[in-house]
Image 1 (cartoon, helix red, strand yellow):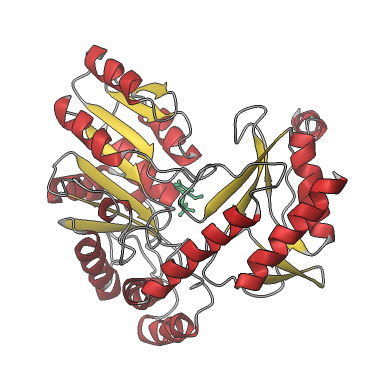
Image 2: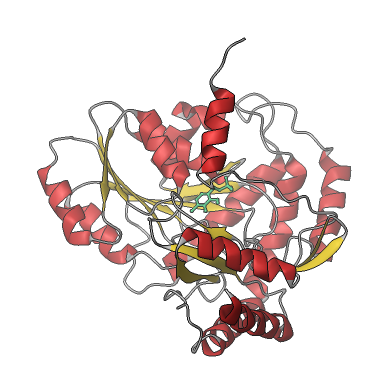
Amino acid sequence: MATDLSARLSAHENKGLYRKRLTLEGPQATDVTIDGKRYLAFCSNDYLGLANHSALIEAACHGARTYGVGSGASHLITGHSTAHHALEHALAQFVGLPQALLFSTGYMANMAVITALVGRGDAVFADKLNHASLNDAIVLSRATFTRYPHLELARLERCLADTKASRKLVATDAVFSMDGDIAPVAELLALCERYDAWLLLDDAHGFGVLGKQGQGILHAVDGFDLQSPRLIYMATLGKAAGVFGAFVAAQPEVIAALIQFAHSYGYTTATPPLLAHTLLTSLSLIEREVWRREILTAHRLRLSRGLQSCRWPLLPSATPIQPLRVGRSEEAVRLSAALREQGILVPAIRPPTVPKGEARLRISLSAAHSKEDVDRLIEALHAVAGNV
Ligand code: PMP
């Protein structure tokens, strides 16, 4: 059969965009083995170092013995278990919103919120640097899609003031996944209140990391109105929480609409209840073990001190996502390869994931890293800076 797939794949490769997967021989950790070689890794979203925690492994085994391994059905048939229910209740309490609803992934949660709440003739406004799942969801919803320049609230306000659509939604990453910077969420909510729009906050990278107890962005800013009916909060459970899944927290009416209208909720098998059971233990570790966030802060400060004289700047970020701006894609790729030669994994992020000329190394810190790990990265970066 004639297809143009091979031509497209070659063109993709020729543009330097071809992506190869690395295959880990063992668990996600700061020390990973690939093709028999060990690496110090600064790549994962396991910010608190929980993905391989013995208490979570125990909880997963106990969960499997109690609930089996598969949920066997969608939530709307017989896939919803007491484990899901208990986790939804605990998550809502933890983030301080009335109700929560579990999803298998953050991608599906974003799909659900946007497609269930808006459609043709409605308007969605999105930060230019939002995660792809938000953009895909907006396209699928068929609402008018307007992207505003990164963090430019004055521009967003003009868009909100000008639109004739009756239903409006503003969607934004709370912590931007490639830059690590934080959206001004209180100001965004005030705008949404003024113009009668929903605000969807995607806190995939803030949940577990921001806020004293790790409750996420809503607890890391002053003056935030948790009672606002405009607020819809989404966070993932496969990053700082160390397991898998995602949830949306909002007013009961919004949650009811998701259950009734969202295809990525109703038309998919529920995640195994053993994962919900495991996440209850994860949640209590997130809440209690404040030291994990303190270590992350110490690592972040250590890295920025250590790289002060480096020829590439770290982008300003108060989160574990620490991008080192290199500029040219080829240079970022060479730098990442040079680090790999030294047994250190740091991904190079290139356009189209980031704007042209802004290729970078995306350093992800974890509470599971030691001070010595961070020092090793700093030294290696200084060494390769001289050679690239
Ligand atoms: N939103 C953001 C900002 C993300 O970074 C990601 C994952 N990279 C997602 C949503 C999707 O979450 P999940 O991996 O659970 O599908």
